[in-house]
Every structure is written in structure tokens, then in C-alpha cells.
Image 1 (cartoon, rainbow, N blue to C red):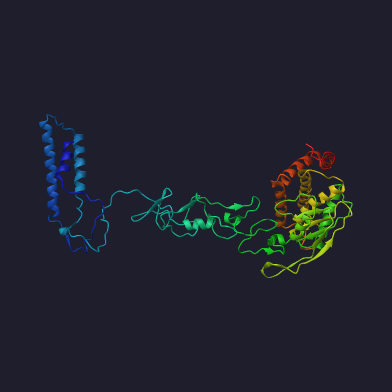
Image 2 (image 1 turned 90 degrees about the vertical axis):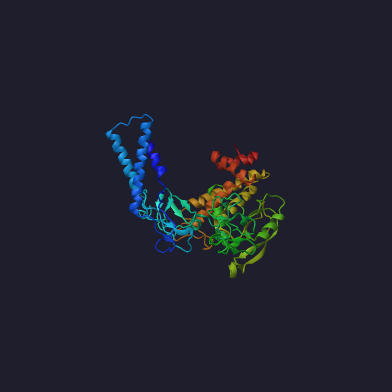
Length: 479
């Protein structure tokens, strides 16, 4: 319609967008419009009439026939009326002389245009005029968008999410970023921005990778790292022992004798009784290493030997009285004495490292007893993987029998067997036993690890007795 364009060309007034810069109540430079409202509206009406007339004239000059259509006339009247109402809106105030304002409060001009109906996702009430947030596919009052952890409003430009819950970044880190169980600090991210930590495949302890190289001590039994806020026990030979492993630790030779009897009975139940008396001695690490150097033959587990089956005559320094633990968790008052070994048979003694938990001490003793049994039966010159493998099978079998037992072991010393009045093991001791089994099963060494798995496979397929007969005749595992 040509007349509509005329209206826009003929009008020189701009429609307000709902905001203006200024305050009429306080601005001394504000000037009211120079014409009255009635005069202004009259001028606008004349402009509209003139525009309509010009449009109709153009149509007649162009040869167009104006059809007196009632529907068309009504539509034109409605559109003109709507335009007239829009022009009745008061023009925004103007500022006199173009002088800029200084120190004034700027308020939005009170003109309301249609807006969407918004409901706050936090309080479920309508969001009126003012600031609001649009996030998580919803609208929020700023004070209603709160951290799921501390319940305070989130005013930061960034926030974290888990599930459908928002968090301050600091609150999210405090709750979900893993802390090192050694230094108690947040585990740092690597250069790729990923959280990288170390953990045993068995224990749940997580720690910073740097602690593997900064001299942080480990428990000599369970191999967990020493937390900075929990001191481990320092043994005389430099090893560290955690407090949980200390509960069932076997500390001297006399204390270990009931356990030795248990292992002998275990072998008897397997029809593998050791006929000769073989001395059992608990020793420090230095004495064990010295005894290993005095042996002509033998293969020893690296990185540390914890038990030996000796065949040579030597003088051994054995632990005769357990240490006490004083200030700084240091062992003190331990007594050692020399013990001269005499060769009466193929085995002169079994040595076990002192200060280890009962289940670990027993598994080492079961391993060394198998060495003694084979030497006393004349089964020698075996390959290392076969000899050490079948010894590991017996150690694993003893651990399994102990963990299956509901009554544990009848060890006289209270420190050598921490059991309840009902005879059941503590949850930690059971977990420790499972860990020692896991160590045997997951050993990656060609001799101890591969040897155990080959021996275990043979025993499961043919039984222990037939496997031992095959080893005696061929020096190999049956397949």
C-alpha cells in the first residue's frame, strides 16, 4: 500500500525503546517540548490524512480503480487506528543545549513492551523486572542460583556441574577433586590438564606421582605409603611398619614358634611331614643378607629377601626379645643373640625376617618349608622356576586355608594373632591376607610369578601329590 510509505516519510518522530539517559526530576538542563500535546497530535492527524489523500491520488493517476470494498476499508481503518495509537506515546525527553550530564542517576524510561513470562527455577515464582540469569535451560533470580555444596548464591562467571547440581568451582574442587592421602593436598594435574595419581591395584590409597621419588617411606608389609600425619613404626634395621600391620606383627623367635607348629601341622595334613627338626629363627635384615651371602646355592627374590632355607653351617644373629616402641615410634630395647648352626642334614635352619604380620610371616615360612621338604626328600637340581614356583603354590595354599578358617590360628601370643573372642579375624587382617595372595598371583617375575602360575595350573589339573611325583621324576611340571 503506497500510503503506508508516505506516513513513514512524513513523520519525523522516533518511537522510544524503553530506556533513556537522564532524570527529569533532578536535571536542571531539561527543557520541556516547545509545543503542546494537543497541537502535536493535531499536526500528526493532518499528516496522516494528507498521506492517504496523496496515495489515493497516485492510484487514480496510474489508472488504478479503487474498489469500495467494505472489508478492505475496515482493514485500512484498523491499521490507521493502530498507527495513530502508537504515535500517541510521549516522546522521550530531550536535554537542552546538548550539555552532557555529570553525576546523575540513570533510570530506564517507564515504557513497557511485551515480554516473555519467566518463572524462576529456584523459587518457582515469576521473575519481574530486574536482573536474572539464564543457565541450565532455565531462568533464575540471581539470589536463587545457589551452590549445591555451601548453599550460597553463585555470582562467579563460571561454575561447575555434577549431575543436575551447580557448584562454585572452589566448592566442587573441595568435594570432588581427589586429595593425596600422603601429603593431604589436592592431587595436581599433568601438563594435559588431567588429574594423574598413583594407586595400588589392591589398596584404595591414592597419592601424588612425585611421592614415588621423594623418599616417602612405605610399609614393609602392605607397601602403603606413609601419610604425613600418621607416623609409621621405625624398626631397628631401617624398615617402616604401619600401625595396622603392627597389630599382628611377629617380633621375635620365641613368639614365632606357635606359628611354626601350625605350618608343620599344615604340611602333615598334606601327607608331607618334615621328619627332621629344622630350627626356625627370626632375624633382622642385615643378618638375613649376611646369611644369604654365606650360601653356596639358592635363588632369592629381588628386591628384598624375607626368608631363607639354609644348608650351610653358619652363626646367625637372631632376635631373642621383641623391641618396645618409644618416642617418635622408634623401636628400642630389642635383644639379639648369636646362634650357631650345625649341619645334621641337608637343611640347617629356616630364617624369617622379623617384624612382619602373622599371615605374611606364615606364608614365607610355608614357602621355605617347601624348600626344606624337597631337600630332605632328595629333590634337588631343579630349575629355578620349578622350585620357586611350587614353593609359592604351597605359600598360597596356606594363606587360602587360613582365610577360609573361621577360627584362625591358636597362637599363644596376643601380638602374633589379633583375633576377637569369637576367634574371627579383624577385617584388616583378612584384607591383608587377600593382599598377600594377590601379590603371589600377580607377581611378574619369570621365576616366582611364572613359576607359580605353571605350578598352580599343574596342581589344579593333576593334584599336589601327582605333581610332586612328576617333579621328582622329571624335574618339570606336568602339562
